Image 1 (spheres, rainbow, N blue to C red):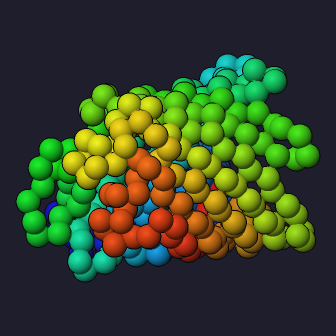
Image 2: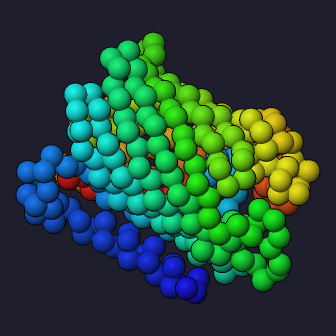
Length: 271
């Protein structure tokens, strides 16, 4: 598929989500009896960083998630994600299919997940040049485990470990977050995340000279969720990605600095 076709899908996803609030009641009536809930979302970001690694600029994305309570304190979910870079200098598009089990232990929550990544233009995208090694990979498979719990003063925290079987690399992450209520319909969400390459998680294996085992990045995010209806939310954000030793050379090679500030907005409809 060509790049502009992928971009069209991303734009259509955004248009679909914008109109989904009118149909949310119908969707809920169709699947509500099955005990299934979910969310449709879409958005645009000025840059696309994933776990501290830059993939492209000007990206559209769409996401659909379904969840269902399987047993007491145990919930299953399925997630479908698609993104496309609209920058004419780079063809990059990606689709993910994920599934997870979430267990509420009372003191905290455990999430065990699996994700299949599909890179339609190769892992490093297509800029007209040759792609070798990991940069030319078209897919990846990952299993991950996350533990999260409430902390003091209204903060929440999480720890994640993810194993990528395609490259035999492991990624670790911990983060904190807090939400503030500014008004009945407007909130302010803060989050800070730090990532670590435990053993060559898309770092030195890209041939860039980045450290195979070191900190990947720090991500600081401020978002402003605005309730449009009972089920639809518009969320603009501004985010800073601070590259560390396992990402610095790779991101700088793509014309990025140590600290990159980007922004975007999304709309989500729950059902």
